[in-house]
Amino acid sequence: MELRVRETGQVITESEFRALHKNTSFPVPLTLDIFNSFGVDPILEGPQATTTPPYEISVRQGIEEINGQWFTKYVVGPVFTDTEDKTAAEQEVEYKAGIDARTAETVRAERNRLLAETDWTQTLDSPFDADGKLAWALYRETLRMIPEQDGFPHNVNWPPKPQ
Image (spheres, rainbow, N blue to C red):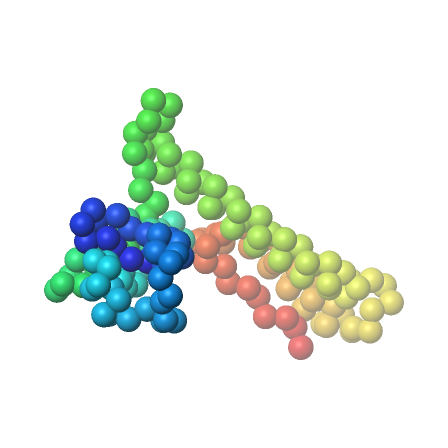
């Protein structure tokens, strides 16, 4: 739990509050009477920002007072700002490229696992007739083509395994 010190606006944790008043025995949990006696307000959890995956996340950005109560404040992030080295736009492009690369790596790893799992279907001594072997070969070819799908790597249509 976090608390806001009314006099200064400082945000402290419950542990820090207890340490500041180490000679006081507080109940667990702290009560509104205690908050009022010591001039602090509890900070309640505010709603997360509404995001659109895969690039946006909900980022905490301070606290805000709503109808006399304090809440954590969240915004859509990440929030980029210009620096001496890079503009905010350049940082955003790198950020998105990193997410795309990590997601593509994960999808390819799953695709490779599925291919390896079905290697045996293409051996000379597999238990399938020509139609069965062809069905598995088409499944494997569809797996190989996953990186060419529209929406790759974030929207992948995995082929169903043959019966």
